Image 1 (cartoon, rainbow, N blue to C red):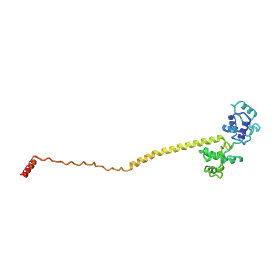
Image 2: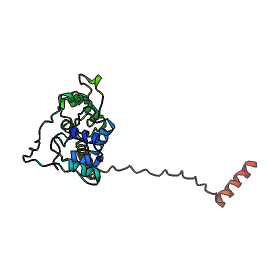
Image 3: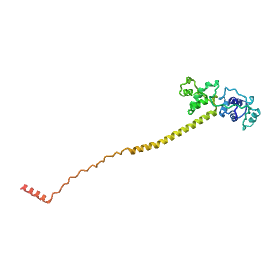
Image 4: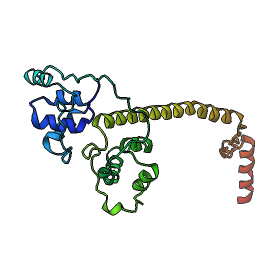
Length: 241
């Protein structure tokens, strides 16, 4: 569906001057419901002047009345004879009044979504990689005065864009983790095979045989024969005589 020319200003006017639901306003303006809730609470678009879509011919009064009576219906923008050219890819334009909020938004993204790459942050906020790197390393010239602020709250990007960037970063992180785990698993069998091959190639070391200690031989005492006893007795008799 074609969005109004000034989505945030149109949403501010619809919140302040109609009884449309947050869903109706968010779908018509192409914003997230949390952004509409922030507008109603005064935390988003506090300094934005509302734009009446009926005076600019973007919305018919009858269409506005129809949707206010039935919350289940959705607003349909009026078609122009000459349709606007869709925005091409390129640097995001940031109004001069909001450019001073870029460092605060970068600091918020770096702190709350470290998975986002510098390229994603530069596309969300409309800044340069050197600026992001300086804030990451806390070497920015004005780092002492930087106060992290939600880029959606200061109007530098939409909630839908932030959610999409976070989802893409989460998918990339999961793929990188799975790839690293697969590489680690692939290295484990090769290491086991290499260790087994090295063990087979290494020469076996023969252990010296240990001889059992021999027990001392017992002295054999020979018993005297009968003849030797008789000779001994005769010798004793002669000695006595």
